Image (cartoon, rainbow, N blue to C red; front, side):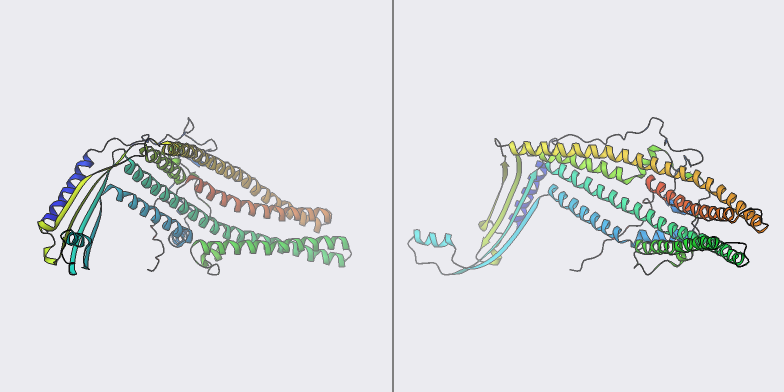
Length: 489
């Protein structure tokens, strides 16, 4: 076996020498592009009343200081099924990277066999010497083949770079899924609470209009009101009652969505969310940071940059096909009629040498592949710029919607307070006979409408807050790692 070991050492040594001769990689050298940003570095829609330049925390949902939200988000980040899909996609990209890295090392094939009979060489030798046919006998053989591609023009290295960038892009995609899960889980909880509040407001309004209806019936019986007044009062009661199923349906839908987001069947609703009666309110102005920190938090920008890096590396893979491929191959074998004779010098053979392959002069296909790779990289570059602008647009739009709803909510709160005052005065005036029933009905309708509109605005305001945090891109930094579902062999 010493001869076989010596041959293997020769082959590996030749591979090491070839590796030392590796030249420059083909294709352009990649450098991450700078993200275009406003000269001020600040968001145009940010005002002191809406947001501050403080950095938002990674676990931004904890700003609500509601333990139920924190527990639900943590459960969703661990058990959400879409995150299991993202984890499986990441595992696939990791395996593809490992496969690409195998090209950096020699490939080996070991063979061994045993046969009984007459070999062609023996039969031919017997015929040449006019001897009797040889008797069948046992033959044992072992062999080792080693092949190593000398990466002179960087085809393998560029392939590994592309696979690594693909893996990092897939990790960014997993972070995008985490942001979506955390944001939608918080939104579902907020919506469940907000629709419960709207339901309570509608029930309170129903009590108010029902009392007014009963009073109108009494006055009609006493001749102080007409049947028309009674019909109008009954109509308002029916309208308010009709809103109750809508709010209850929206509340139940939010609870079902929340259950699925946390990886449970819809019927296993959160008891904490079911008991919530009003949406949580932030006790501080929104911390949003600045534009430069936005790009670091947005994994879709990171994903676009990594996809660009992968496609630029693939230009080098295609360009390397324009040049020769050099491989160093070696083999060692031993064949003997006895098992103990394997490895002896008499029965041992080996060989080593380079192999050159080149498609020259037919390189039109390789040049077309280079052009194709460059066009793909150009599209990825445009995609990166689009991702940057989309991040800015998402944030500016979310801040604008939130700021406008904040002003609207404050105005509605004042309008609701004034409606309550007006309704109280109308009730007193109607009982004293100073105003007509129509004026009372108008004041009552205004109060019901402003109560409902304010409750809807509070729900929209809470949802807009979540949209701002999702646009800012945080929530993935401290998320737990998830293992894909196992597949039994």
